[in-house]
Structures are given as structure tokens and as C-alpha cells.
Length: 530
Image 1 (cartoon, rainbow, N blue to C red):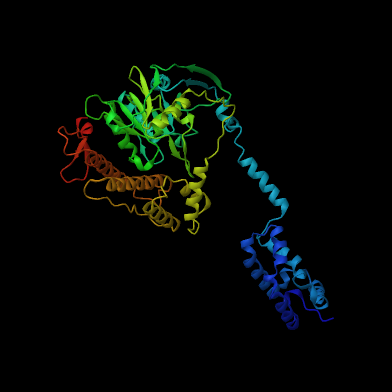
Image 2 (tube, rainbow, N blue to C red):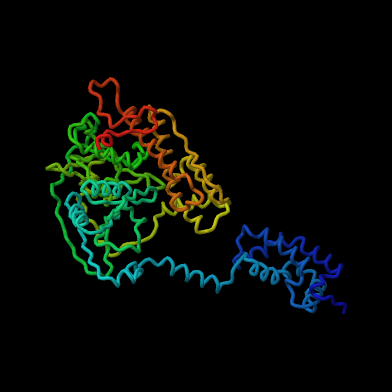
């Protein structure tokens, strides 16, 4: 028996036999079905068989322990030519397991168990044992909209030596930041896209995800609270003014009156304004006798913004759920429709007569008793992260940084935003200094299309700022981005006047500000007065 050492390879005659028999191995559908049943991805069949053939011919030492095993295998091929590709299957199965094409069942079971443990969000009150070891008291202010619950919580916040406000929206955090500072309580603002750190500030207003889990505060106020085993006090409030559903729909915008708020659910029908501009628009609406008597808003007003609304008008009861247009849920109707503050009697109606009955039924429906709350990303959030991950698939980047990019507030539905987002990722992945790459027009928009273009660029600046706080070594143009953000706010506010003000009107609307001489900064009149 002529035996070679396994590391010396095959005899030439045996090598030719192997190559001849393996030529059809990748086209054997019986072997393929067996491999797929064992866990091989159907798409990996071609690469796996190609690599296996090359490895078996060139490196038998990777498949056999000694020359005796090699000899037995090759003699079996000679003795049983009819057996065909099946004789290679045991070697192939071992090869694809060892090279990561499939994993063994025991490893899969361990991975599944680990995944279950990592995604078990049923007991959030057990996550922070150090926090629960502290002596804390939670006061839950509960009640309907316009009942004073937020006012009472903020009153206590202002009295504290140091305090924290967490809100679900940037606009809410901005409102509280301005509210506290106007009342003489030094407060900083921290959101994902912006930081306004006030020297010697004792308080912080932030969005929930930016809350520090290590800092200590005398008072913390959240728009939503849950019970975690600490001392708990419930304070309930009643609505300060009654609310009624009107008996007739609006039917025509000619029937609009002062103090009305039109709520829309379509992004195309509402300007996507920057939070700072929305805050300014809310102030203009709340101020009496300045010509800004009507508000157009999304359902975000139901989050608790302080607005002086007399009547809510639902432009439609349909909302896009990611797949189709569906009726808004009663849980969305109820928080939105009562948002009528300083009027003695709040009203709500719909634009279309056909929608009015649904509004009445939804408002009168008793909410179901919730016995548990789920903490898990929505399907829409998963879809956004998946879309971002697909865009970044070929860009070299560590996993944690890739995940951070996937959670950036980028509107990937817009082609310009997609391109610049990918450019940002490529620049960061290559370790380069990433340019802002956003350019503004010299003059304010004069039509809706131009205004929407400015809105998109405002969001791109926000994305750059968001990334600059997380990756300062590559996103170095933060100062320039902040300066450009000021310019874009001025362009948006002047553009709103251009787009919404008709020159045929006898009484022009009150202007909110003007450009300086070299048009480098838009000065709001409120800032000039201060």
C-alpha cells in the first residue's frame, strides 16, 4: 500500500479522480437539500461548494487526521463509483460547520436563550438596583389634558435646589427650558441635536434619551411615569374647563375663527418646521391681537404643549400606519382633542361631516384598562433602523458606531438626505474629517417647494449636529453647523411670511424679525428688545 503523509497531499492519480468526481458536486440537488435542512442558507450553497472542492483537493490535511483515513476515502471512491456525491457529504457537512456556513444546534439553542434574556423587558424596575437603593419619592400627577398636572409638577421643579425635566419631544424640552429661564431659574437645554449649557445652571431640560442616569437631582419631572417600588404618591386633577364635540363639521375653511387649531396627520399637508420655528409660531399664536389667530399642527400638540386653543378641528381621521391609510385610534383622539387651554369651554369637530360620528364615538369610548405596558421599539422604528443598516452595509465601521449611525434622526425617504447621510458615514468610516456639505440659498423661499427644500436642509444640519456630539473627532464643524442653523431658522421664518401672506390683503401680518445689513443673521424682534 503506497501511502503519503497527509500534509504531502494526494497522489496525482488520486487527485485527478477527486477533481473528476467533485466537478458535479455543486449541481447535486439531493446534497443541496440535505445541507439546507442541516442549516445552510440557500444563498450560501454556491460559495460553500466551491470552497469545499478547492480545500479538499489542495489541503487534505484539513479534512483527514492521517494518511490512513485519506487512503480509505480514496479507495471507497474507486470501489463505489455509483455512490456519487453522497460519499463527499460527511466531509462537506463538517467543512461548512467549521467554516461558519452553519452552526451546530447546541450553539443555536444557547444563542436563542441569550437573545431571550437580552430582549426580556418585562421587569424594568429591576434594572437599576443602585437607584432603588436610594430613598426616593415618586409623585405621579395624573389627569386629563388642561387639568394643571404639568403646571403643579413644574412649580415644584422650580422650587428645587436642582432639578431635571425629561420630555418626549424636543419642542417640549425647549418650552420648559425657556419657561424656567424666564422665571429666573437657570436651566440648560440638552437634546440629541442641541446643547445650550447655561453657566451656573441648576436645572436641566432634556429629551428622555439624553437624561443622565448617574446625576443626582432633588426633583425630576417626566411627562410619563411608572412605578418602580419607591414611595409613591398619586395626585389627580380634573379638567379646568369642559370640552364638547360640536354637532356640525367645519365643512369649509371659510368657517374658521380666531383660536381654532387644525390638526392634520399628513406630512405633506403640514410644513415640517424646525422645533425653534414651531416654538416661535406657538408664541405668536398664544399672543393676543397680533394677527396670528389660527394654528395648524400635527397630533404632537397632544403631548402637552401649552397652547391657547379654543377649538380643535381634525382635518382628517385617517393616518398612514406605514402600510396603508387607517382610522386614527381613540387613544390618539382623546389626548389631542381636549388641548384647549384658556377658553371657558373647549370645542372639537372635524372638517368632514362623515368623520364627525367617529370623533364623537372615539371621545365617548371608555379606555381599556391597561394591566401591563410594553417597552419595545415600534415596527416603524425597526424599519427605519433596517433601512439605515442596509445603506451602511458596505461601509467599514465598528458595530457600535454602525448602530449609532442607524439611530441618527435622518429622513432617509428624501434622496438628498439619503445621499448626504451615506457621505457622512463613508467619511467617518474612513476616519476623515467630515464636511457639513449643506448649502443655503441667499434669499428666503417664496413658494412652498422652496420652503420644503429649506426644511430638509434644516434637518440635515440637525443630523450633523447629532453626530458631532457623538463623534467629535470626525464631525468637527459643529460651530459652523450651529451658525448655519441660525441662518436656516431665519430663512424659514421669513419664508413662512412670504408663502402665507398674500400681498392683496389690506392689513399685513406682523413681521417676527428682519435680516441684518449683510444678511448673515436673522434678528427676531424679541431678541432685539431683550
